[in-house]
Amino acid sequence: MPGLVSLHGARGALTQGLDELDGAQANPKVSPDCSSRIFLHSLPELEGITPDELAQTFFSVMDTLKSKLSTRLLKYRVDEVEVKVRVTSKDHEGKPVIQPVRLVASSMEGEWLKTTAFLEKPDPITGVTREFCLLGDPENQVCFLDPYATSNVVQTKRAIARRVGSTYAYDFLGLLEVGLIDEWDSHLNSLHKQAGGDHISEGMPSGIFSVQELLEDATGNVVPGSRAIGTNKVGMVAWLVHMKTPEYPAGRDVVFIANDVTVQSGSFGVPEDDMYFKASKFARERRLPRVYIACNAGARIGLVDELKSKIRIKFYDEASPAKGFEYLYLSDSDYETLPKGTVNAHKVPLGWAIDDIIGTTHGIGVENLRGSGMIAGETSRAYDEIFTLSYVTGRSVGIGAYLVRLGQRVIQMEQGPMILTGYSALNKLLGRDVYTSQDQLGGPQIMYPNGVSHEIVDYDQVGVASILKCLSFVP
Image (cartoon, rainbow, N blue to C red; front, side, top):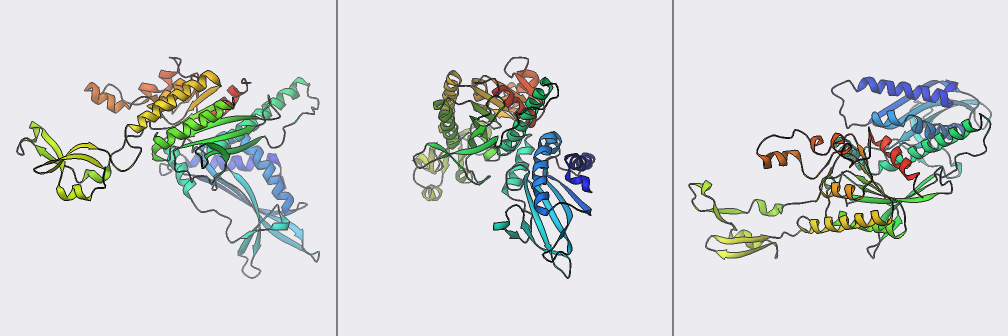
């Protein structure tokens, strides 16, 4: 298949694989949050190209296809595209040899469809590949026994995010890069049309997208840095993104803040509040646009689990619990086993009556509400001083909905209700089933006509494109 190495041929092959995935979606056994993979094995040998040249062609073609076919790649949750081809070349003695090459675009390491290429070295007797050597750096060639990364924590987190109708927080960086490439394609096509089809000297600059994660240093301040994707323990992440846009080809900086819905359902605890506050303050002090990607469960209110099995009830009448209870208490032995300060209690004949439950873990009580007030104030201040924009995906609850509203400019995904509390809680309060879904409270059909949301998008890639379009108007 000589045409496979061309953009047209590669696009046709990848489109055929996506068509197969489209048919597979109809199978009820296919989970809506599982990953998909496309594998293509080309049997005819390629001539007139070396393995290294083939690798470079694959990298270039795949970057273009990621942009052109991003909608379908995301829709079918394609996390790996693999192509195996055979290249005809000559050995050191000038004899013709066939070299198998494996080309992989994989999201297994965190970056969306990151491209790599391997030269297979088969056993001369069995024909089974013994090792896979990376192409692209002949001086420091690294070989592996297996080119496949095993399913890891990132894959698990992607599945969790998809389950709530969103995209894993770190994967938004890949969507931003694809969206930026689309912006440049549209810009260059527009210039080409204005020139009447004549050649234009302007082209897409190199290195149009780079990212540094904002991390806390030893002093507690956030600074640009990097860490392995999926290792964060706090459900709030932020990045300093440098983008070369058609409006600013020399590059501009934008701060992105996002809930990581895979950490405690994206709820706001003290660590999340602090991270949001510091990242927003970082943007405000440097006069940078600030974009908030909201997918959360509101403020974190927890329970002291170690007490649940120990708490006892002193009823007014043991035979008739409906008459109410006098107090909750702990037995003497249970009270003595608890760490000091877990509860405030006073002595009663049955043991220790509980006055206050404090617990040993910080960040499960009203301290989270203090943090909610702090970041609400910071968001309002940021709106006054810099450009703020929010994108709601999956869901945004409680303080998450307040932050979106205080940022004023809102893009909402169709599967992204903004609510202060769930519909089931309201039904209980009202005493009857008035609401049947979250969308009746804060879905697009509510928020868009009311002017809270300013644009509704079908899915996250379109949402990212809308973010970039909004930023194009911001100096």
